[in-house]
Structures are given as C-alpha cells and as structure tokens.
Image 1 (tube, helix red, strand yellow):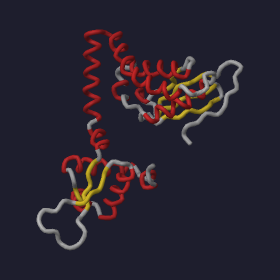
Image 2: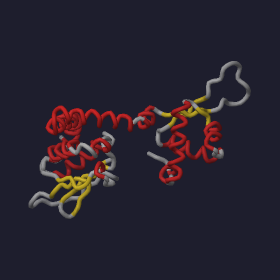
Image 3: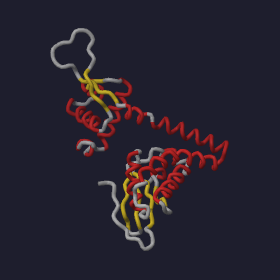
Image 4: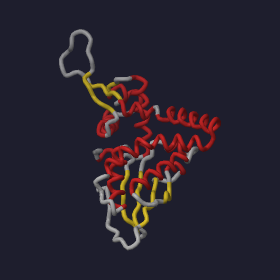
Length: 235
C-alpha cells in the first residue's frame, strides 16, 4: 500500500522526486541532508519526498557506514535506490533496444515475423494467467475476466474487470511495453488474442495506452440469454 503522502503528491513534487531519484542514481548512498543541500530543499521538504519514496518502495534507508572510531549519537541514515527503482530508471534504454530489435525483425522477416515474435512473447504470460483462471466458471466469461484481471495485476498491469450495459470490460492501467507497442501494434494484437482465449469468447480492444489512451480497455460482450453480474477486482 502507498501512504497518503503519495496520493497527495502534486505534479511539481513529482518533478522534484525525479531529481532526488537522479541524484541517488548518480551518487549512491546519500544522506537526507546531502540531498537537501544539492536540491536546495529544507530538511522538512526533503523528508516529505523521501517518506513517499520509502512508502512506494523506491528507496531504502540504512545506517551510514563509519570508518574509524564512532562519535556519540546515532549514525546518520543514508538512502539508496531499490533495485526496482533502478530498473525503472533504465526503462527508456531497454525500450529503445527492444524497438531496434523489432525494426530489424521487420526488415529481415516482414510483418509476419513481428507477429510471430509477439505471439511467442505473450505465450509465457498466457500460460501463467491460464493457471489463474482455471478455477473460474467455465460458462461465465466475466467471471474468468475477473480472475484474469487479478492475474494481470500480479504481472504488473494494474488491471480490473467491471460490467457495462453491453457486457463487461477489462481495463489495464499500466502497459510494460507501451512505448514499443506504439510502433508495433502486433504486440497489442497478440495480447488481445490471449485475452480472448482466456475469457473464452470474442473480445474487442477499444483503447490502448500505446495509442495514447489513458488505459487499455477490452470489451467482453455479454452472452445471449445470460445474466450479467457485477464483476470487479479494484476493491
């Protein structure tokens, strides 16, 4: 869970938080006083940012190593980026590499080769999610969509399923490959095919983050003669 500090973070705070992240990436273990001095922030201001980053799992605090004899008082704490935060700092680099690789595949093998690559990439995801939906009602696509949303959330997609007048919809609020999929829609198409197979019915992708929408939305039509029940996973 994230703290109330994070939920109240304003855009200006996010910019400062990025600067804190960059300093920690460059300097490694750093005290709050050193960060505040480098950024021109008061102790209270830098502490607010660090508390939010601690709550989100972006940094960890540890005692500063002291060489030689230790003076009186507790040693100062230093802050270090977590591995997850460090990986996110390099996301753009990996996106560029993945895009370059797909461009090479497209040049040498054509669009069919890109589609085959995309299908292979989502095969492992499909296998993991299939295990999660096996216990859902085989005759209720929306029930399977709920189980699938939970499985996708565990994979980092921040998904939820809900009902609408014409059936249901599966929403994914995060896309790990959005920047690459913006150029290669075969990735989205392969993912949509996986969703269709797992929920057991034809689905329609209405919106994607890769195309500039705020969320990836997949429509799941209601079955003829069936009763639509509320299905949510964002509780």
